[in-house]
Length: 69
Image 1 (spheres, rainbow, N blue to C red):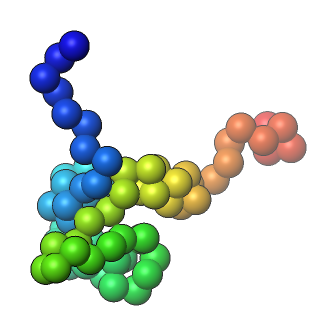
Image 2: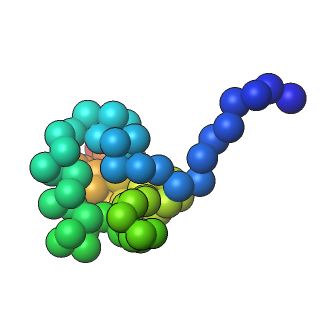
Image 3: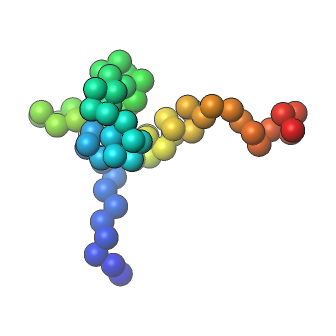
């Protein structure tokens, strides 16, 4: 087993880096409720699974559908 830990909860800084977005946009997504997150004290955390689901819902177009081809 390796020493790599895959965190289930991401900080907003992690989300920013993963998505390539800025701090303002990351906070906007969370404060509007568009991106599900939890607050623990002063920290905001995003569940990795929730982020993956949110990203799937944000797809620009579904190019795998047969009627599109």
